[in-house]
Image (cartoon, rainbow, N blue to C red; front, top):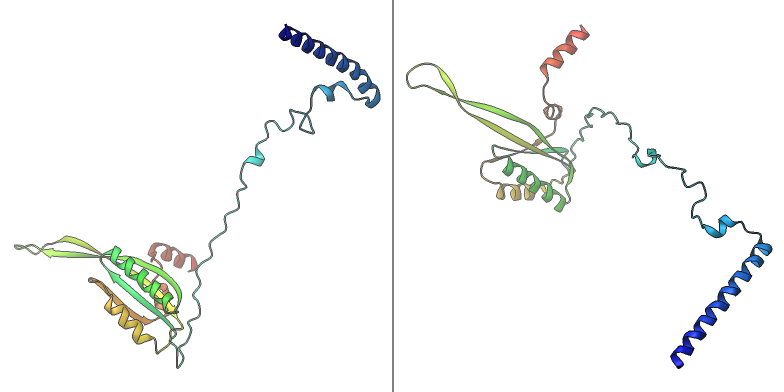
Length: 210
């Protein structure tokens, strides 16, 4: 019987709450004078809901204009002093590109470890050499193979004269087989050897100038 009474009391309370809500609505409208649209829908946007549909320009990343690459200009060659060398080229060449590349990286890391300033490190265009063989009977020659010579250059500056013997001793002791090492002073001819020759273009430029 107690369970039945609880249900009756709950129904009575819900009816009383519903009546109180309906009586409070007119008072709310009369005091604040709020429109029906504000009460029915609570919009999270300021403008119309269809504004901005179809716009896509803000989604496309801005394309920056490509800058023209300037020609590499030759830097002024620093003259040597009584205690320091000028600009030196440590040239590494060989037929195995992997050995040449790894040895040039080793030289670059060694210079950083010994506080020797590395101006730049670059690759020289690969040179191809044809190996010709003459036949046993006859005078004609045919190509037996093509050897490709790879070269890397590590350009260093401001190396002290007292550090040079130690530097060269370490390089010679760690020089791999089949790799040639050469250290020479940097000249203008070395700078021009970095670029590939284009005889056709040079011929057309000469004709235009004449």
